[in-house]
Length: 143
Image 1 (cartoon, rainbow, N blue to C red):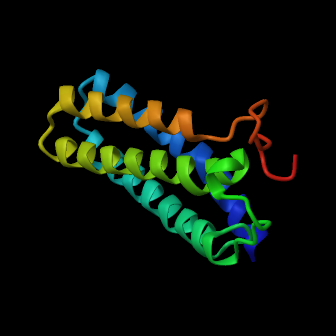
Image 2: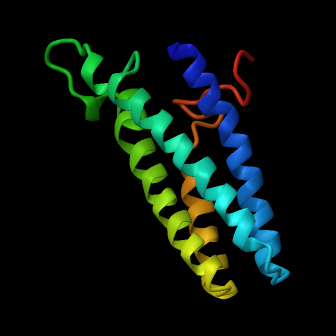
Image 3: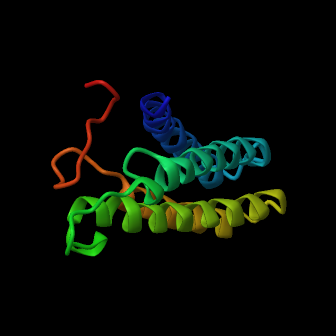
């Protein structure tokens, strides 16, 4: 089950990025359809949040199953630090910005909506374990 959730979390990354970019294009074009598309973006973001919280808390390398060697800490190991501290903080912050952007979309406040999504996009791109990073993962599950 854990592997399936991790793969789903990975695939939803691409859905979320595509929805985020689509919302940015619509905001720049000042289309009223951002009211519905921003809802889909927020649903995808919150679904990822729920899966991520499970993986961070109870997953194979989560807080409740963490089995560090004696004398070591989460902060001294770059992999644990990234997946248990940095990744969750960046992603929860980006979801907060996406949720605030949704409120601006309902009001058709295009300027605020655009800036909130740009901030969320930067946070997401910084928090993804891209291949080539020390903590990197493949772009697609099973690759």
